[in-house]
Amino acid sequence: MNTTKHAVLGLCLAVSACLAPLAQAASWVEISNPAKGGFTVGGNTVTYGPIAAESVWVYDGANPAGAQSAAAIKSLVTTQFGLPTSGTASLVLASQGDLASSKSGTFSINSSFDYLAIHYGRGELLFHWDSPVAANTVFNFGNLPRGISNFRAYSAVSAVPEPATYGMLLMGLGLLGFMARRRRG
Image 1: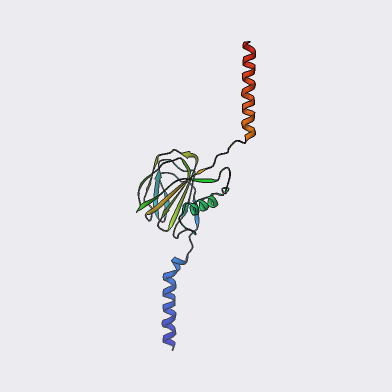
Image 2: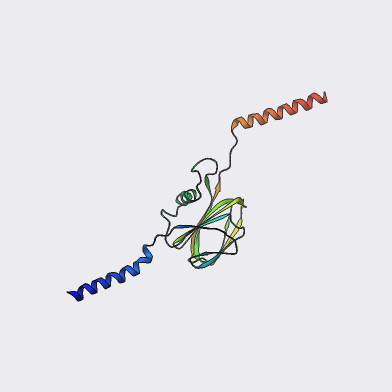
């Protein structure tokens, strides 16, 4: 009986040692200096470009909660960057694409964007630029720990002037026209 207990205990310890790394939950980590020249993810020095981001967040080692749909990733980006869900500064999908699994490569984004989510293996990279990146930008990446499968690019909604603002503009232009005409006549 004593031998059986030791065998079961040994088996339990072996299984728990193998499963322990899988049980560790991944968490979001902000890259303090997301230089294009590289930052570390999963032991790899990841490069990207062509424009250095203002901030980058990494979730490495497990898939973030939720699906990979554009709406699910929009919610993830909104939550991670503390953005409103509607109105000014909320996000709209600018571009998306599924990619062949590769640890390095390029893809083109056909409209301007402020935020970019890249799903790779069991992780996610979230980029933010203070000024929108131009349409038709070819984004490059290199040396990810696992191959990327898709990207989602989003633009922040700009403030839209209220109707009263347009009314004041038209009144001001009318007043300028009236004054110019009065001086000529």
